[in-house]
Length: 315
Image (tube, rainbow, N blue to C red):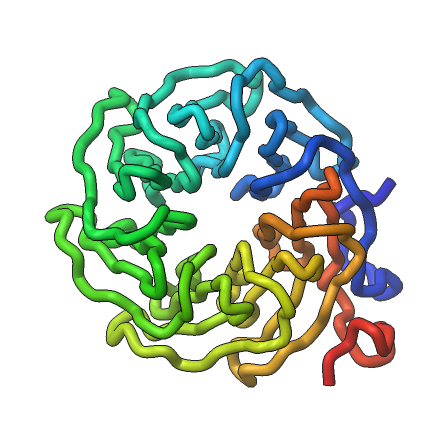
């Protein structure tokens, strides 16, 4: 079993270093403090990251867990469910603290950077709902979508958020609830979206097999990454904003370089769809969850031509 907290090891090659077995995984997340890995699908599983051992699982929920996310202080996590509930859980105990009834299918959830607010989105009402975390009160509903909201993301400063739509991405002002602009370019549904940690960029993945990089201030497409042969379900920025990770229904996880705008590496050990991807807080590792009932742990250390196989290194 691999210890993710050991110092940077020059002999650790890039690629899969371990896997966690569970139900089909619709969503995975890494805690901001780096201590836990979270997975949601047929149930909720929490693993200790240092030895990759399961801390506990929650299997008493009716319906499917569609999305999970940690609070900024790593003390809590939320789950979005097909039954219409968003639940707030305590990480240390697995105890349910509060639930929010959207009366809708919940496909995506997100915490604000200060932890005071929660966003939820899905369908068929096609609304993004803003909640107060502590009181559980609904603050506002955002309506302008033409399709199910597959993904939502808060900006790093907490002043705005993104939501996905059919062919478009919406940028919203949090305080006023006003839509600021839309990013156009994807062909059909946009399935995943994320802000860069610096806040100046956004990345999206779509049913059109592309990963696209956006300038948030203008809403203009900077570039697109092509190589996936199936819809891109999930995207994530590295902590230093220099790389993008994408997971696709083609069964692969891909790493892209933002500066050079080129592909870097392809991880292809999943069997079936990859539903969700995330970086570790230190950027040395990535995790992915898929329909093959595994969460895969990938080492991003020592990504050099010498350590990469010809099948995975992308020239």
